[in-house]
Length: 135
Image 1 (cartoon, rainbow, N blue to C red):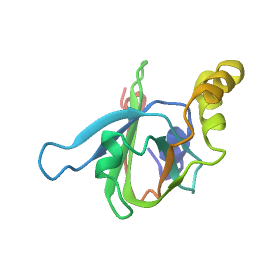
Image 2 (cartoon, rainbow, N blue to C red):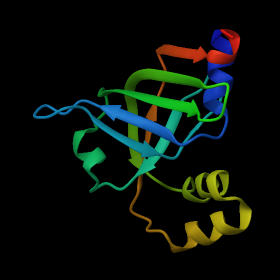
Image 3 (cartoon, one colour):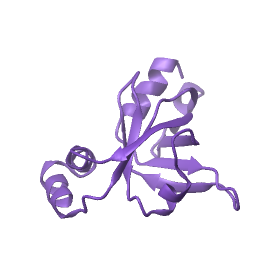
């Protein structure tokens, strides 16, 4: 996959798989909703008391993998350091609408807690394969 193809694939709607190191165990690998625009930051929202939050701080190296589960299989992984962790302000509703659609996204957002944080990462390294190109 070209750089542009990797970035566009990551920008499409997928559930991401976040991986980050833990000092005392194997890496933590968990699914998350995320958002990304080509050339920009990748970001996701988490609870400040979550297991993920325990191991995240600015500078932490993380990777996010997105995959297409239908044939032909594709995946992209973006790696980089966390650049910011800030209290969520107005990000919750657009993220919920992205994943659930307008009606359910607004309902979900209205019923979710407001103590979330937004984690941002600028992708520095990329991996990606489009198995449709190998057939």
